[in-house]
Image (tube, protein in one colour):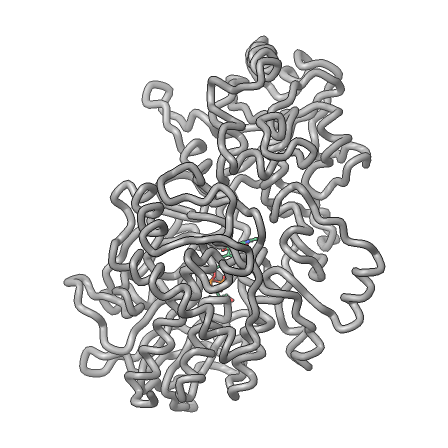
Length: 547
Ligand SMILES: Cc1cc2nc3c(=O)[nH]c(=O)nc-3n(C[C@H](O)[C@H](O)[C@H](O)COP(=O)(O)OP(=O)(O)OC[C@H]3O[C@@H](n4cnc5c(N)ncnc54)[C@H](O)[C@@H]3O)c2cc1C
């Protein structure tokens, strides 16, 4: 069994782990960076790469203003007692510092995703016109050398050469991208989204001599005199152990791919996970084994998904596709097994998790699972659906019927329920309002809706009146879980008595999130992950005596 010694050991190569690693290394630490998968980047590389940083240093460029007070007021308004104020303050206070530091010391370069509203923008301190969501500018992957092919690419966004506004994740008002521009970007493999974020952080690590070790699954923390001093791994060539003088940073993502942990902790059904399948709660288990306190365990970054054919699967399998702007456009509603609407379809995806988890105590069942998206031919022609482009024929995975009555029958819904729902919906749409669920009342709903009706309720309200009619089952999915070991404001893991466990840090989806059950705005998961990675990397480097 070989033993290597570092100042700081980081487990996981998502945005949280890479930020911890680059920060520790730039503060003079020797860093060991270990990844369980064969490729680096985790779910972060599959993501849109948006980072939600209130009061960040790029505000002046877009003539916007923000403050610590507004940001804390906003989080407090959404907290429902779930957000730990120490963590919220650490996040809000450190976010701007982290952006400035990363831009000064690493290849990371951000720009504002203009106009992207907060997810609950009408709450106190919210930003209906956006300003808090950042993304990295395009990054030429040829600068990564042999590492360019070792960054994982997700199925939702196989075209890597896009910016946020050019994908349905970044709003429905897609910026046009010409084929000439796409070709230009391909010359140096200029990538956007999570690819750019991960690529830039990875380059920063490589520049400082931190080369990730892939295929290395951390299994167990080594504890001496109540302090974490190392990690035991399963590697490609068998077990090995490393030592860490300053600390070990857990950045191993959530536990969404571990059935027993999901069953044991989450507050409601999780039907689909869209993260990398290596996120099986290893960091959580390691922390539990040595007596870490846990927090926020019932929560995930909930998101509705629809199963669509996986073009990369020769056996004809499917993968869960995130339904973002698709849910919010006119001429589409979401109904339960009674054929009734049950929520504002255009509301923030994370908050819609609560609607899927509504429980009927008499029937003793989840009222809104299963659920279906229902839409008409005009919707399909105008907006397409998931990976189907406008004007393309309806794919086989949609249930199709010439009338609503026949659609009901095909879905096995009670006769007349869906018809009555659609009749009511169409009446309200004609009046330009949704008295049942207030769809179209928030700047959020309208931003994601039809770009031809900017800022208007008609961006998201539209009649379902032109057959054939379509339906597809929608699932309660998650981007990842957000509970785990509790930390203090510097990312140190706490024990069950609330005291820091010497030498152990956590950042990203592995930790008890600083966001409680909230998703503040676009980038609301990556941002706290990176901020706590930054705090942890710096503190661990300091503990090793390198600063
Ligand atoms: C399509 C899509 C779009 C998204 N867009 C956004 C967005 O724009 N903004 C946003 O904020 N969020 C977004 N998200 C969510 C976001 O990607 C995740 O919440 C975030 O990436 C989590 O970061 P992380 O570093 O904690 O975990 P990950 O990025 O998942 O990294 C964890 C890493 O740890 C590794 N690992 C696990 N166990 C071990 C072990 N035992 N030893 C060593 N390594 C281990 C994993 O293999 C993985 O590589 C999106 C997600 C998806 C799927």
